[in-house]
Image (tube, rainbow, N blue to C red):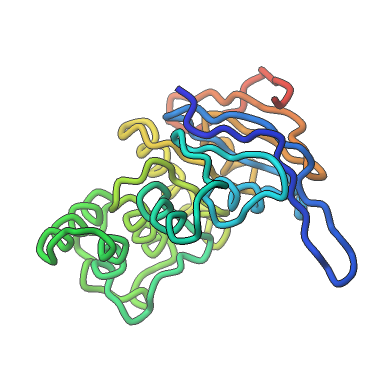
Length: 245
C-alpha cells in the first residue's frame, strides 16, 4: 500500500531578487512500512523534501499525498491538526524543552488530545520504557547524554502513534556508538512495530540502516538503492540500483 505519493513537485526560494530552485519535478512513492533514507550533498533539497512530506512547507507546483490526504488542500488550521495526528518528528538537535523532565517532554504531543492527565503520563512512561529510559523519567535534558536525549525525542515522536515518522539527521549530533544505538532503535520501530520512517542523512553508515536509499542531486532524484540486512541487523547496501521514479 502506498502511504506517501509525491508527484511532479517543484520548490524554489527567494534570495533577495533571485529565485533559487531547490526541487525540480520530483515524483516517487513511499510504501507503508518502509524505512527510507534520503541522501544527497548539502543544498540538494533533501530537508526541503522532508518538510514538504511532513506538511511543514508547501510546493510551488505538484502534489504531496500522505495516507490519502492531499496536504496542499488543507487550511493552516487543518494542516496543524493533521500534522499532530499523522507525523512524528525526530530532529538532529532533539528540540526538547529544557525546563521539562523526560516524561513531560514525551507527554507534550498528547496535550492536543482528549486524554486525561493520568492517561498521558501512563502512555509517556510506557514509551520511555520502550526506548530504555524507564529510570530517567524525572531527569531534565541537561542531565541526559546526547543519545539519551535523542531517545526521549523518539519516544515523543511515537507517543501519539503517528502514521509517518520523519527524521532530519537524527544522528548528526551524536558520537558513533550513540548513533548506532539510535539507528538500531529506529530499525526496531520499523521492523517490529511496522512504523514508516523517512530519514534525511548525509552519512552513508546511517543510511545503510534503512531498507532503501534515494539519492538527490541538484534537486532531482538520481537513483534508488535497495538495502539488505546482515546477521547483526545492520543494513548493508545491496547491489541492486534502480532509477528514481
